[in-house]
Length: 506
Image 1 (cartoon, helix red, strand yellow):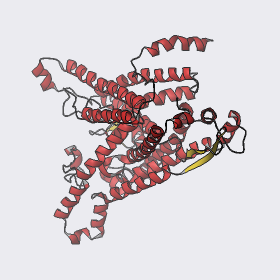
Image 2 (image 1 turned 135 degrees about the horizontal axis):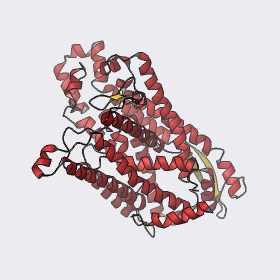
Image 3 (image 1 turned 120 degrees about the horizontal axis):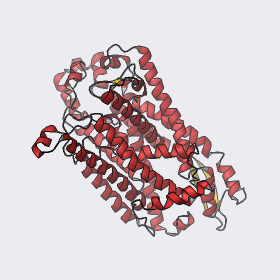
Image 4 (image 1 turned 90 degrees about the vertical axis):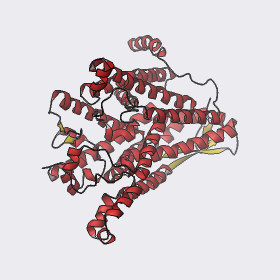
């Protein structure tokens, strides 16, 4: 009774939160496509609007996570989808541990869950912005403050408002796509960010902007090389002769510095993810009332999609943010120390929790160039910790995701029953259907979560074009494949309206 009373008291408040109105009837495919494209264009526009008043010496403490957080360094959407994902993690953990007694299969509880998630996103926007400001990463421009005749404190407040506003805009843009568009805004923004990075990794003729002090300590890495692989090859061919390139050192240089290894890894990961996405177990179905009407319920190998990897990496990014804040603002070295460029240093705990992003993080010759005095056991432990986080985290978050998004055996059985379908050879009974699908869904969820963790680790080990990282590339390819299937499904239902009712869609 106390739980019901709490739910009844909090529900009216959650309903008052600003929300995008849900369509009252079916939205035509062309209109969904229009909304999706419009939000995508708005995302690119916002990613190119710089935060007013921020000094050029400001650092992006989460730069390594940009591909999966779908943010843009120095822009008003700096936070990207970070607050949304973090809020989802916290809420799923609370519900999964039954600290919040919510049954997500119940429509009323599901509405409360979504309302709490939105409220928590607002909280996370503040909690993810303030540490970056107090930690000295988002620095106000003192010259501009003097020109405007205001204090740097006022300028800091203006910066905070802009970044927080960007986070709110991303939240509602995601809601627009989810309700009026195709797929979800979170997925759309990830694909947009990764695609932008890949285009830069192919066609950008500018060298990377790096800290000169860091570049001076590393020899032969090629900090004046163009970022784009096409221009990089042209540059390397202009400064090295063919005889030099055909030597063992020359071939190794082209594989690493010339990004040939990254190009191969990008192509292999793309093909591998497409293959894995098409691997599935199909449960046969037949319609109870229409003789000859048959169908299949697909249980993909990656049943929970790659979204658990977003949750895993977002959790790591928040841990790194806390460690960086403690060291940069308060000088606390309990969790480790950081370099001037914001990189965690061995043998601190934050170094071992930092994700592997390329061969520079685990191949000893390259690691030695970045970290003076590092020992082999530190490199091995760093690799094993990241492997454990990816695989174990993939399994845990896959289970949470399936249970909280209505993809579990109980919900699936209810959907099949509602659509009028049944499994041939079994009674048309919801409990019977649940028993049959339970043979597959829980096992595939665990296997898929572990497998996507292994794929992410392999992709991260070699580095990919544009520095998108293994996780980012994996997410982008998987999301594009699922978006393709979603578009095909939308077009099918658009051509045959009766199919919507047949599939149980209102």
